[in-house]
Length: 369
Ligand SMILES: [Zn+2]
Ligand SMILES: [Zn+2]
Image (tube, rainbow, N blue to C red; front, side, top):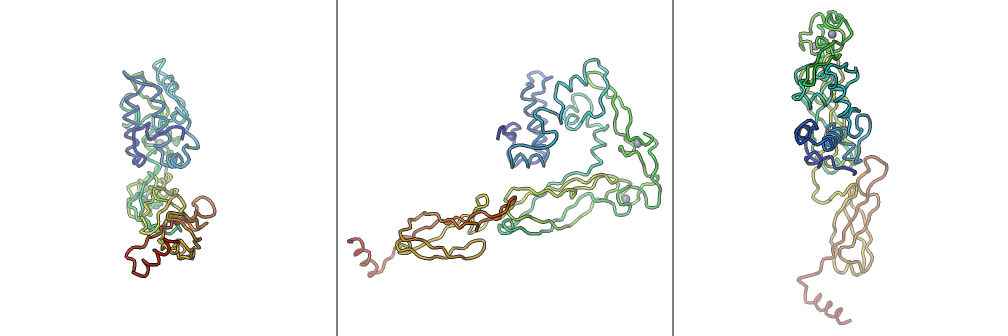
């Protein structure tokens, strides 16, 4: 791993998304280049770390591969925009035209209280509210369920698409009109006032949330939101080979978006219970088996319990205590490829105690040979 993003943000690997966000905000404010004692290099580094860890999907990629893929992961950028660009766009002449594809995403969050936009409504907030929220959940599964996969029910209390209006927010049988505020364009001109001066921007229409249309009569069931908060129970397929702490993503199984907006995703992190007999090391299974002094000395065929049940293992004569035997492909199925891990058995040779008279005599004879 090139950089440890968790260390940069000062959070643990198990930190929640909320904790990561909080840590990022605090650090971003501390080392902001415009502040006394600010540190631009550190600021960029913090931003880079947050680009990876602030997004559950990218975080998963980072956890798995030590890097992230796809858009917005460019180092030092706010989804492609760096600090200098931002300063140029918002400062300078005091009044500047803002380009339409300016992404307020995390900028708004971060500079909200510095520059006076962000939290208090405006384009970013309304646009965000259209897509449903992602949901983070945990699920406890047994050791063997993790190894071989299973299906489990999950019960979530969340925003679901309103069944009466199918999510469009209009009372059934009533019309959906062009939005009078933006005349259907979904956008309105707005002036942002910042400490660097005010500048004009094109924002999402607050009346129709950028959709350009509006229900003439709001659905009575959901109040026009297109969503109802309720319990939903559904089956989740858990793939064979998943390990403790790993997360599966179910696209669009998060909260429904407002008025038919895209649903968020559901992320389920697996809590795999321990097994009394087996330990897991990646996809290998580790266990121990006891053999007697004479079995070890003379060799034997012994029974070993594996995930597939008992199998016979031949141990050669002269086996030392602590010797490891590999049972190929008897471990956990690989999650992302064919095949399985191995089962590694450690043989413990039990030195006899409480010898009978006869046994004692035999050992003494043995000692004299
Ligand atoms: Zn409805
Ligand atoms: Zn509108």
